[in-house]
Length: 113
Image 1: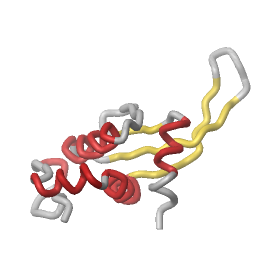
Image 2: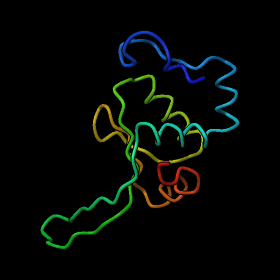
Image 3: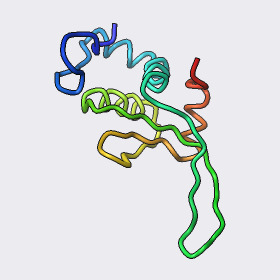
């Protein structure tokens, strides 16, 4: 059971994995990431343009949003474990935007069910 179950608001209380949960995450980080992105994340097509140009380019991106520092840290620890590049565009968001990193996530996260 993931430790978000309990009394009080998630972002106001401590959420940490126990030793046995960390062992499972170390063995199966893909399943944890899939669950986190399916619960509090999304996969979408983003666009950008270069300064001084009117042309847009489009790319796929994963975005995870959660107000709990602990849950975001659990996510980023699992991404680091798999060598997946991520960044923090806002204090409560984690983004995976690089083409190779998105390709890795596409291999096991997939569309929400």
